[in-house]
Length: 381
Ligand code: GLA
Image 1 (cartoon, rainbow, N blue to C red):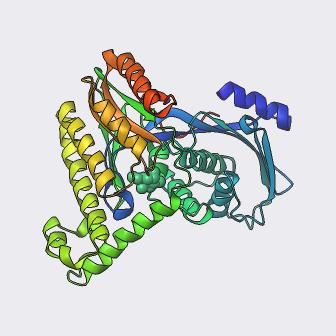
Image 2: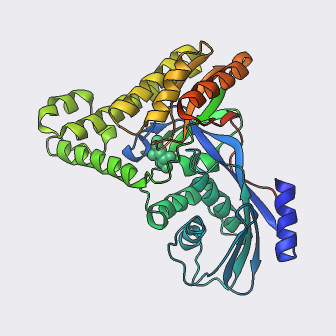
């Protein structure tokens, strides 16, 4: 891919490019906890968005995406949200460039192999790769966390998704062979080795694109905030669901809207699962970790209601394979991929089996991705 994008850039713009790459992510456990100041446990994957970039002197953003045979031009003095994926590039320009003083524009080629709408965070990868590329060519000296925060603002204000920080953080901070335990309250994190030679992560795509789910996602976030606002009347120390204890939530159960109660309950339990899960990982107890993944799925489906029929089917089907230790809906939800932990020696058996089962019921073959936990965003020079 790296060679390909260099060639494309040369062909299209007639000069050499600087190349940046940023990966999508998986999340082992801890879903919908990031915007509730909780913990997440993502890892970067070995699929990337690549950006070829060079500055130009005409104050234009010129973008070419060979994959889609698409090209766009925007004046960089007038960036605003637009429909479709170029909005992410415009958002990053808006949030990370001191664009008013900038005398240059940029020529950009985009390519990549992170599937779109599959819950692997292709948009965060796009923002991260572009942010890193801008930082490099304009020597902005931004930290990776600053780029991640700019990418999160871009999602909020240029794509109307009020997401947490997990995806952008993971894309920019990933480390091969490790997952990251991120505390979304203070952005402190630690790397935890994900080093289980006998197991691998397999993503199974429900082929239900979750791209239209942003309003439901934003609604979940509002429901959590409603729970916090209600409980803080009784307990002034509560500022987020991270501050809420299960007894406090249950004590006020009858006064809370039942849907809000369910949402809050899920988040509290999911955070707890993550903390327990980290202990299991560190102790090498993969089976115990897998059980937590199933419990997470149950909560996502029943209480948080961000699964869908097809994802539920896949998780139940995965459970029937003895080589699968855990499975759950991954990411924002409403389709996309489920994440499974599978015994390495039996991966083919599982992949063939689940494709067949799903095919029989839904008449389509789910894509399966065997994932390595890989390096985060980088400049390829
Ligand atoms: C999406 C968001 C993340 C996170 C997950 C759910 O991927 O971008 O911030 O909230 O959903 O865990």
